[in-house]
Structure formats: structure tokens, C-alpha cells
Length: 255
Ligand SMILES: Nc1ncnc2c1ncn2[C@@H]1O[C@H](COP(=O)(O)OP(=O)(O)OP(=O)(O)O)[C@@H](O)[C@H]1O
Image (cartoon, rainbow, N blue to C red; front, side, top):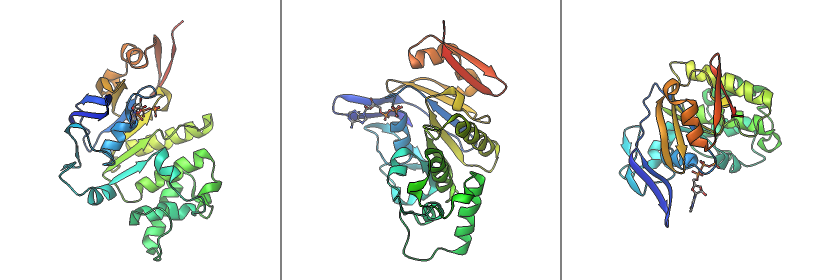
């Protein structure tokens, strides 16, 4: 993203964003409610075009490329996408249908290879036992894991996870963080961007961070350089204490 801004009327959703994600990088985007995180994900997933500046995704410039050809190369898990999944769709089909770029079961029979791949991914995310269940009967955490498996189904070159741990209980969050950490540490995994409000949700293995407040970038770069008490306090507008325990982060208000 080069000089990127998104405006709606007089409101700037994001402004002057210069950001680049390389294929071997795993980025966390951190910021308070309304900071512009989802807007950045919409740009990166080609759902939105910038009002200002240039967005290039996987070497293709938005506005000059066919986004329908680009989208299968991007894996996206977001609340908006989850809400569009039909409640009666079987979990296995939610995942396998990503290979056909559809939501809702495809009328054709799927290739056996695709079904096997979907089952492998459900297993990787720890929800293989739910393959036959209608998506609408799943818990919040089970839905998140299913949509992440769906995002991985097309072997994407770019993986975008918008608040994957939101709404999970402590055990569910820890389990997801461990699974995302394994993915981040896999050299064959795609370039990844994970959006979160909480430093506790940063999976070990993530390499970079972009901190966002009020639509502008507070800091960005290597995780260890960027995730400081000063930057975090500026991002959330509070005096925050940041602790590191092993390869995990914890934050709370000072005093
Ligand atoms: N169409 C619109 N018109 C005006 N303002 C908008 C529009 N769409 C989004 N916004 C505003 O832009 C800001 C950024 O929204 P965005 O969803 O990107 O934030 P976010 O960081 O993902 O927030 P959250 O953590 O709450 O999900 C918010 O203040 C939102 O209200």
C-alpha cells in the first residue's frame, strides 16, 4: 500500500498508509475499535478500492486487475464472511466450497482430492469431528476454526485473518493461538496478516506488527521493535504496561 487512504464523505477511515507485506512475513495488525483495521483487510482482500494511493496485492494493482482472478489466491477469514455462510451448510462443504469460490454447496460433486484436503485442514484446526455438522449449530470458536480451514483451502499466497480469536473462551483462544503459531512457523505457510485488539492473541512466530489508531499508522516493523509500552500506549490512548513471558505478550493499564 502506497499513500493509501479511504474516505467516506468527509470521514477518513484510513489515511496515508504505506505498508508492505513480503511473502515470508507474518504480520499482526493491532489497534482499538474503529482504528481502521478491517478497512485495511478489505483493501488487502480486494473487497474495497482506495480513495487515494495505490494498493498492490500479489503483484497486481487494484483498479487495473480482475479481482475475481486474484481472490482465489487470497484466504480470508472475517466476521462478515462467516455471517454469509448458510446455517444448514455442512462444515466439510463450507471448507471444500472455497476451492470453487462459492458459499453454499456447489451443485456439482466435489473432487475426492478436494474433500480429502478439506478434511486435512479441518483436522489441522482441530474440528475434523464436526465435518458433518451444519455450520449453524457450531459454537463461536468452532466457526472460527472452520472459516480458517476454509481460508486455507485454496492454498492461498496471502492469508488474512480478521479477529480470529474474538468471542473465544480462554481455552479456545489458547488453542487457536497455538494452531496459528504452528502455521506461522511453517515455512510453506502463506504470507499472513492477523487483526486483533489484544496482544495476548499474538501467536509466537509472527514476525511484524502494524499499530493503527484513528486510521493512521502509529508504528510498523519488526514485532520486537514495534511492540513497546510507548507505542502500545499511544495506540490505545492509555498508559499501558506491557509484559513479555517467553514468546507471548500481556498488557494492562498501569497503576
Ligand atoms: N461507510 C462508512 N462511512 C463512515 N464511516 C465509516 C464507514 N465505514 C466505516 N466507517 C468508520 O471507519 C472507522 C474504521 O472502521 P474499521 O471497521 O476499519 O475499524 P476497525 O479497526 O476494524 O474497528 P473494530 O476493531 O471495532 O472492528 C470506524 O470509525 C467506522 O465507524
